Image (cartoon, rainbow, N blue to C red; front, side, top):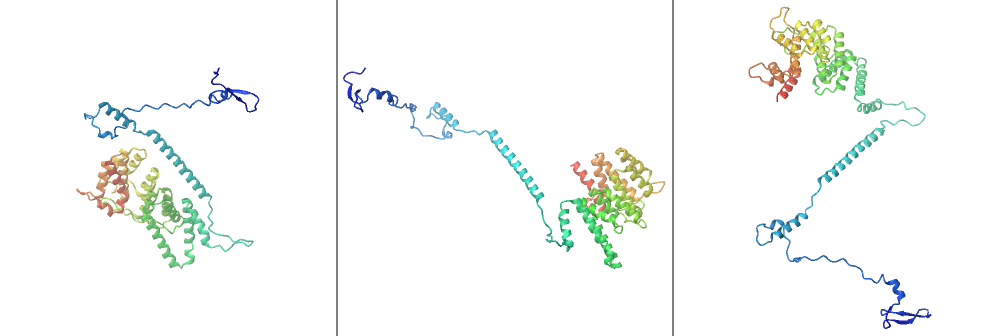
Length: 410
């Protein structure tokens, strides 16, 4: 209880009675509600300051010398530890994962963007001609207004372009006899024939739809007969052997006297000259051999060219996959100088020569293949391979084998 000296009595706010007060001037009833708020706030204690705080200067770690007697070894170790704590090592796995996810998101965005562009391109409609509006029909249509939509269409479909080009050519070529005189028509047809032969022979890429379109044109127009060698070479390069076979067979059947252009292969000394009528059969046999049809190949050389018995045996060995036996037969046939039934034709020797190189290729005998090709190009002691560019036949038959053997032996 408070003492008598510390108590004071005063009149309350309503004047109804007296309330005791302590020395602070507050009554006990008011202290009941303010005792919690009168406590001073608690403060966190300060950390103790090191003894030498602020007395030294910071220096890089490289300036400290471990053998110096001016510094305490313990102090040097402590400073080194403090410098190590300041290093920040990145986690490369997190960085790699971040960039990998970022690249994956970009890839998905690019794929989606290409898909949207393709969809927008497919759904886009291009008007190449505006039609008349009204009840009267639009009958004034120009030829260019019909060709322009076809031109845009064939640029997206090579097969349709091949068919359309052949049909347009046939339609225009059919008007030559009606629009020109007989002499002018003959000159025009000869110019067209020479142009097609030049295109077939000069083509280096041999784009299959284009070569196929030219062969379709010549197949429909019997007056345009191409060179047999140009047809076979272009068909082999463009892998259009079926249409090439059809074209050569039709040219053989429709040729009035069976005269086809002579082969450009240089003749050997012991070989008989190739009759012009058999050149087309020889080129036809190349296409059949490319397709692996050895039955027709044997029939062509037996009935049309007059093949030797060795040729039939070698072709039979190739058909059953015995390239070693076929190689020995071809080598024996090429080295033979005397024949009881007459020397072989140039076409048959060409077949032996090309088949020999193919057998070397199948048997993976690259040194022998290189030697055989070089001997065919120049059989001197110091062969000059620049002669390869002087003969188109050598470029066609020997150059691929020469490059392949050189690459395999490199």
